Length: 285
Image 1 (spheres, rainbow, N blue to C red):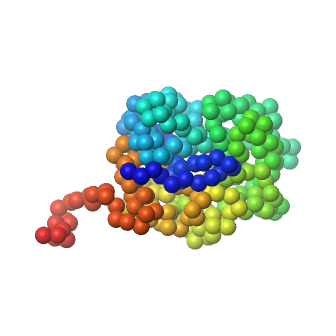
Image 2 (spheres, rainbow, N blue to C red):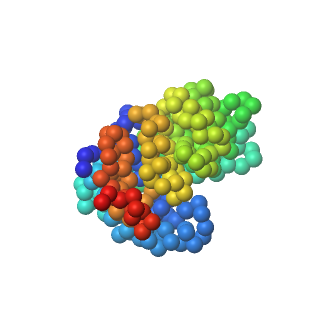
């Protein structure tokens, strides 16, 4: 298997496929029973390490999410030991916001506490989570209020700043105001799952972003089949942009990697078609 293509973000080389952690931590965007299933199947240290080993061996060395959640970090270290690959962490911490923050600014002491913790865990990137970023978006003044304070602290701890957002305005206003960020995280999938405006509009926002975009939820948390989902994102993103995927097994990881490489190489995938009795009439004799 060939190594996965890479891109440059803030002077650092990243794999264009990113390993998402929702399927390790139990965030299904579906039901509590699905959350439990995820954690039962893919939430142990060994299960996570087995999946990460597949990604790392394929050159997919970038991991995104809540890196302080157990047993994720131990699993990452196990996979690093098995493969000799050093993971690149894109951390998405939450930073407390209250009704006074948009005017008076963030509690810098609290910002430093959160950022320092992520730096100590080895994060290369720090992108405040949507639950922080999007609360600070001001559509009247066309800015992400007070986020420059957070970016300065992130730089002080030698991490690369960016924004994680569900709002397309975050990307547009940050670009317009020259906010010191090197990348964005944005939802992007063919069905518009969790997206605030139409898919073609989000595609336009991403294509016109001044910095590379890390897209998330390409399979709409399992609601779009991988073939449709991956063909859509890889064929509509720029070469500088990235796609974040989540899997529950090593075999699923292998499939997503192979499908993605076949799309990028414009060749037929080696992943076998899933068969059922109803397809017997369309099989070659």
